[in-house]
Length: 142
Length: 142
Image 1: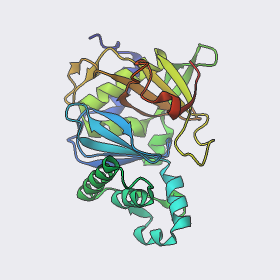
Image 2: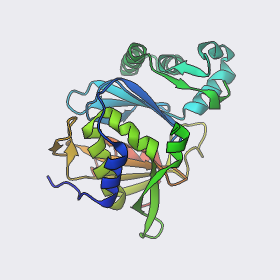
Image 3: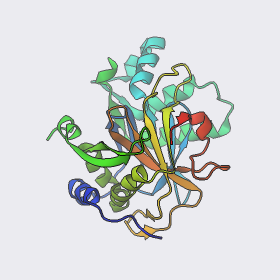
């Protein structure tokens, strides 16, 4: 084990990040990547792609779901609203619950016989509901 | 400072340019850096030490992230740096061995902004590359 050197970049990063905060489940909307990250536990994780929208984050120690990345959310919402205008009911004050996004994607999935996919989406929906996670959708034209 | 304000503020870092093998600058938004503090010291150290290492010492660089089958140009100019850091960090920030069978990925968008990074499963046949790399990316450029 040999860690990379503490460079000027690393020092600046540490200064900007500041002190670590007590962990709480949370979501992060990153406009630079048009993605949302959702975290339920602070475990170090690895990613495993579920489909074109969702990459699930799994604990490196337990392989349990500890979060997820939703990529291309703006496009997904636009397409969903086009196909199912009633999806707009779920949007309040420009925000939509992540559980609703997971559910919409799961319902549109052709692979409902895939038990692992069903299990993963159920777990993500449960976690998003428990955390009451939501995202702003203003840019999606909602 | 608003989220938009901290998104515009950037910390730059050198990366290997696959076009000519020389260095070029990519950036991380301050808001993205501050978000890592919500996941604890391990996440801060992972990002501050491993991102720079991988974009300067990649085992491969891919372009054209395939996410959506009905939009072949989506993400066409985006890059994914893949690397094998010599260490990792647990949740509390203690340096540990890198997880077995994993590579570290760093994603850069077409505005040269680093927007995501994570451990990911290594490919079974080519462990220096990410799992299923032939289907996930349009091409390997390094």
